[in-house]
Image (cartoon, rainbow, N blue to C red; front, side, top):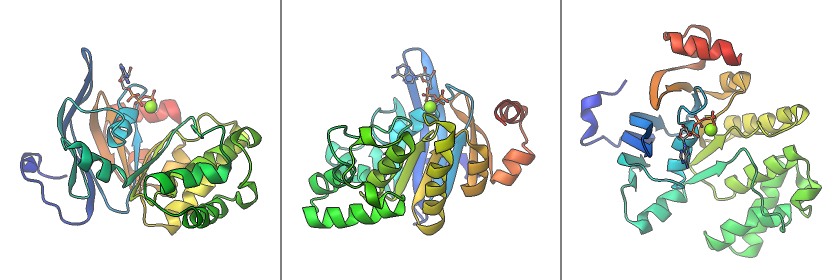
Length: 258
Ligand SMILES: Nc1ncnc2c1ncn2[C@@H]1O[C@H](COP(=O)(O)OP(=O)(O)OP(=O)(O)O)[C@@H](O)[C@H]1O
Ligand SMILES: [Mg+2]
């Protein structure tokens, strides 16, 4: 563990990609994140587990700047994401991609266009460059033949694989995954998890992942963080957390989900 008193001037050692320092987030009188400190090193795959309402999605939404903390600082690759001027936020945000539980594809666009849209409008790629990148990614997620399909013509699992390709098209340093298989029919889950395993194995992207798929978490994670009431109550490698947790709360949670 890092020295909790060393927060005033955190070292940027080049390997640390994400850092939350004393982050507090409240909704009304509900303190969802309570003085939260944690860091993720570049290239690592970190899984967040914990009971419903423990603040897992809120952490990912803070990184996507879909919501703001009440207190504390969030740093990505040595640059402040919060607090920071709007222009800096936009730059830092480009390093972060997210895939949601509900795939949120643009319904009126083909799979290909869903993937090329942001690289063209946000990164300024030419249409040809963006399409080349998008076709490579469709191939990676096993959908090379679905470039022209609309979301309604795709299964849930296929839509989610397009959503993964869309996030990767921005070449983010960090991929945030929030229960990306929990809206899928059971027979479609494995295909999506296989794609994510592949990405974890073959790229150097940093992953921050919320999942109830404990076998998947065990396979891909370098580190598991157990949340309860807006704090990390336990963290460690998956073999330790899943097989021999220190905290009763972790044990209870795991016996309920496993
Ligand atoms: N927009 C919002 N307005 C008010 N309260 C919110 C809002 N978003 C989240 N909350 C509250 O914050 C707490 C944490 O929510 P969050 O979605 O981060 O939990 P979670 O750990 O992702 O839970 P789950 O496993 O059910 O997805 C909950 O008590 C929730 O009701
Ligand atoms: Mg959630």
